[in-house]
Image (tube, rainbow, N blue to C red):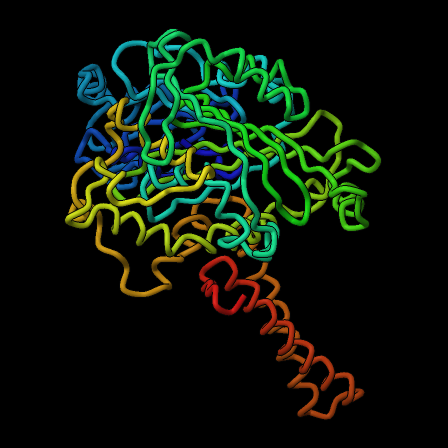
Length: 495
């Protein structure tokens, strides 16, 4: 649903999953000692107003609808109907129709997970990383963004290792890093299948063949990547897995990809110095706290959420060994989010339009082989992902024509709208914006005072002139920083 590191516990926050509008809120700590996040349907049972427009009443710790003031406790039961007497309200609240619709909720990896299925929840989200290298690590930061392309396109892009040198030129390597990529034949498993039912994600045409005892081979391939036998064995129950070798930032990279659920995957591997080593690699390792160690870990953990047709949500999670310091831990979170915004901006536009091109007649997403021409070994992961989706029949992927998708924005400012897609619901970035606004008001006031004193010739005039210039420059500079939270165009021909 969302990262607890980015939600504001003082307000209800709207989220959408697979077209379902939900509200996330937290009971404030009080006498009961309860301090838990909850996920409900974003509708008040009274007149269906969105509860996300409401507030958390500090006196009761209940979620209050802003329309008529009805209040609801953590279970979803109505506790207050102010329009009637308490005696009448008791009878009304006894009716189940007065209750908000609450869903089972758990916290794992510092992320809120919700069960929307029928019956009691099956399993626990923490099981996704049990026994892996992630198990027991500290979850130190996260970055969330709603993206104007669908869930299938989101994961397809994130397991496409070959686009990095071009789509993210200057941020994670450069175009000169492009080189032949060695990738093992991806393997995938279907829900409810045994190990013997696993399939190979086919070659570039996406054809799948039955898995015939390839577990040992897969373990052997993964062992070549840092000798991670244990990780490979644990990854055998992943829904999709493959290993690869490429080059990025002038370094060799060897890693494995594990799709642990339809909504969570991770990469596990390492960066290695070029033959003979380089000074750049030493600096790279030092910045990440791995000076003198063999290989710098490459880790990427992502939660992928289907939001609705043409929309998805990526939650990027950063973990580390307990007590291990790195550069990211020393930077303010809002600054890391600004960098992450630019990273996702760099391929957002063509992913948005690519998704539509795949669905526009005569092409169809469920006949993607005819739309895509993927002859390279590095395309194997894409074919495997599309084959897995087709066999699972993922309901959250619109298999119809492009007409089912929302219309494309007419302006780049709407397509790359950082504020709506991230800032509006990130407590870190909203706090930074409020802080910048306060600084601007203070500097503007100081500049105005300097101007008045200058005109009145009171005191040292050069000092007041300096104050005026400093205030103008600072206010203008902070305004440019604020733009980073709203919109920044990304044009590849300028990079």
